[in-house]
Length: 51
Image (cartoon, rainbow, N blue to C red):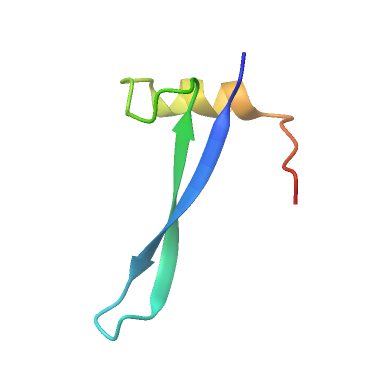
């Protein structure tokens, strides 16, 4: 099973990055599948990034 994690910036009023929202996908379909946040965390534990 493939898991994908992306980060999306959240900007403040001065257009500076304030924080990042982490997005989880568990398939090649790039849309929200309704997976519970706790289930998403369990699915990616131990996952390594290619950075």
